[in-house]
Length: 121
Image 1 (cartoon, rainbow, N blue to C red):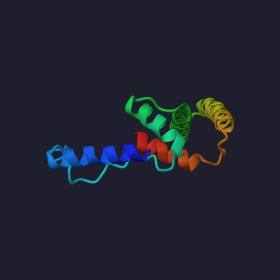
Image 2 (tube, rainbow, N blue to C red):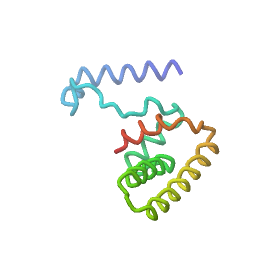
Image 3 (cartoon, rainbow, N blue to C red):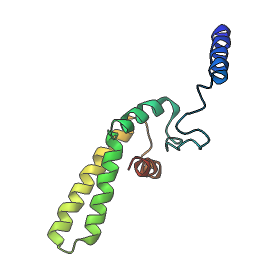
């Protein structure tokens, strides 16, 4: 593996000397935080690919729906509608809990998931 490091370093040094890095788009600017610091390292690449493709993991989509339904519930005055919304929230929460359990995650990781949701918006 050591030989590959030497070759890579030489190629990088050669590119620097030729000025190939002088006109990079974000030169001198800090890297953009992708918000995946809390995602386990083995899942980061998959989440990044899904984010770039506009796909959201199912558990995040469910959390988003639960939050939206809770906001709707808070704004709703009709008791029959409130009951229907509560039922939808329960169904989504159950599905979310099953997914999280199957993935070996604690159900109490809601704050973590909400942070990811905020980053993916």
